[in-house]
Length: 74
Length: 74
Image 1 (cartoon, rainbow over the protein chains, first blue to last red):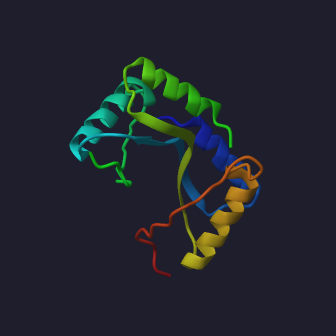
Image 2: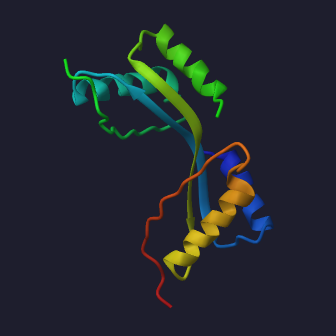
C-alpha cells in the first residue's frame, strides 16, 4: 500500500543525516480499555470496532493485542 | 494530555453501541528498519530520531521496541 506520509518522513530523516533508515511506514496507534465478560468476547468486539470505525479496511490493515487488567469480580 | 481525536472516536463507538469502551487514546505508529552496528547504536539513533522528527516531545510521549532482523555480516 502507498504511504506518502512515510515517504515524506524518510526524506526528512535523510535530510537530518539518518541515512541508515531503509524503510518506514506510518500508521495509527489506538489504545483503549473495555469491559468484557471473557477474552473471546473482547476479541470479537475489537474486531467489529476495527472493521466498523477504527480502521478503514479498504486501505488499511489492522492488528490488536489484548492485555488483561484487574477487573471487578461479579 | 488532551486527545480530541480519541474523544471523537469514543463518541463514535458509543453511537455504534460499543458502550463497554471506557477510555481510548489515539497516536501514531511508526515501523522502520535501519542498519546499525550494535543494538546500543540503534537505540541511540532511534532516540534522536524521535526527539528530532518522529515525535513532538512538547506534546507527545514516545516509546519504541527494537527487533533484530537478519543482517549482512561484514
